[in-house]
Length: 183
Image 1 (cartoon, rainbow, N blue to C red):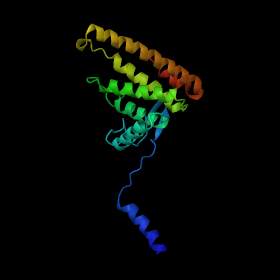
Image 2: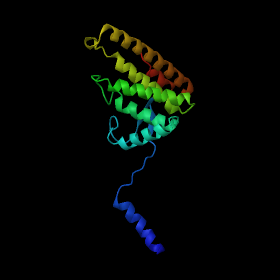
Image 3: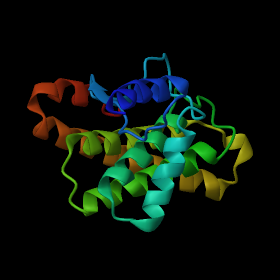
Image 4: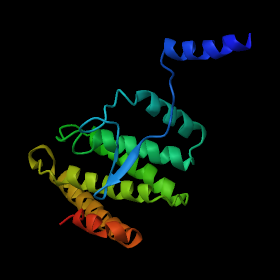
């Protein structure tokens, strides 16, 4: 009977895929954080749908789980950044990046100290700057244009502030963070 168990386990493993919700493979290179999954460009949202559902479920039950807040904010940023959605014809990227910003800020408020979170926060603000920098005055009222300009300046100031903080925290990569600052 003991010998049969040794044969049974490999057979079961070979019969079908086993779903695992492991942590994301997160990399910081040249001051930019991203999910390294072996592909080119932004990650495929469909590929991570189970992970997103799992994180959403965890956050409903435990809204102060900093690791889940970080991972969910990262996924939102990766699915809505310039590479994933270059045009801004819809408001979805701005809304999703704003949610990601709020999640990152919440994790920082809960004293999560991981440098990856701070890089993510800076990157989210930089993404928001990009979203509000596009001049689409033809489709906005003068009040909306004014509001967009205020948000652009606010997010630009915060992105630059957080990149300066990163340069002080991570002196080995200070040049990369300074390079990413907004003009």
